[in-house]
Length: 120
Image 1 (cartoon, one colour):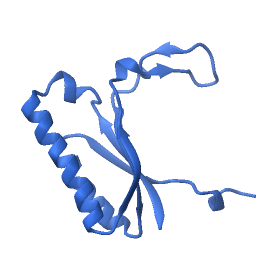
Image 2 (cartoon, one colour):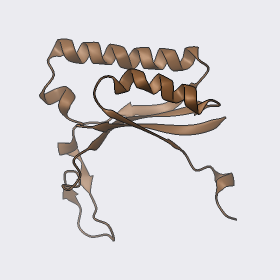
Image 3 (spheres, helix red, strand yellow):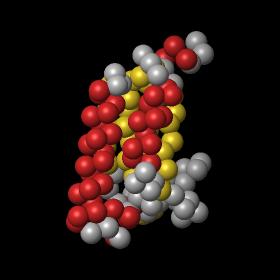
Image 4 (cartoon, one colour):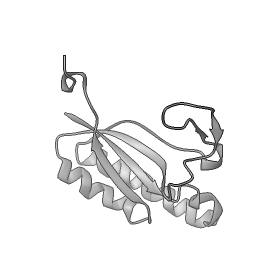
């Protein structure tokens, strides 16, 4: 099986700053449905997490330097969470991802680099 990371990209803080409790509850129900659908279709979730607010992020600039608070300021979108998924059917995985994309965030799916992919 191939391993993919499913990145949830958008306004990472929207859930807590603009949505009321009912909207968040409905949104979380869709994420649960996403996980159930992945399992039902034969994909395997091996990891993942929702991330805390971007205000809690720590940043080290490219090339090194002092650690600062917050995300990269020039970035309009942030990663709000991720799933690690093993799948033999990328097209079907992408179809499943439309469940959570419908909530308003973008979804980026990328293959993870495995040891056998690296040059020896």
